[in-house]
Amino acid sequence: MPTTGDHRYRVKNDRVRVATSYPTPTLTKQSFRDECDVNMIVRKFERTGELPVGPAAATYADVSNTPDFQNQMDRIAHVRSEFDDLEVHQKMAFNNDPEQLLAALDDPNQLGLLRDLGLVEGEAEPKPTPPVPTASPEAPTPESEPPDSSPS
Image 1 (cartoon, one colour):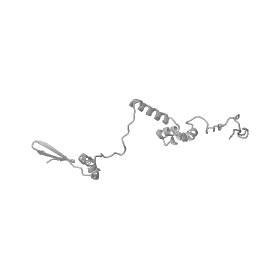
Image 2 (cartoon, rainbow, N blue to C red):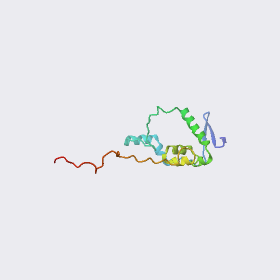
Image 3 (spheres, one colour):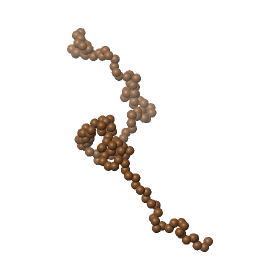
Image 4 (cartoon, rainbow, N blue to C red):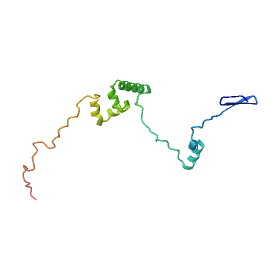
């Protein structure tokens, strides 16, 4: 019986049988065997009527108006390219992550930081709007109204 490496060859009835041995322990955890066995899953479904729930529930969305895959990839490449063109201190403010920059651009609370970094133009702080008067100046005040002279 010739052997080469981890393979053992055995000839039986004009067929060559090959067996492979693995001397190192497997990384597969046998404790999950029943959870992964399709027969066990079906039996549990027959008993309970419920299928195993994954990490997240299914999400349904209307994506008919979204661009195709190539357009999305082009947009991602464009965002990465624009992010790479920023100065080092600007990128460091977002941990060199374009996704964090995009999240900051969508967050109105980050407007001051974006202005300080020079990523957004405009005033440092928005001017407060003056209060709108609730009554007009010509409206009579309660003191100037004539006393109620209706008969009771």
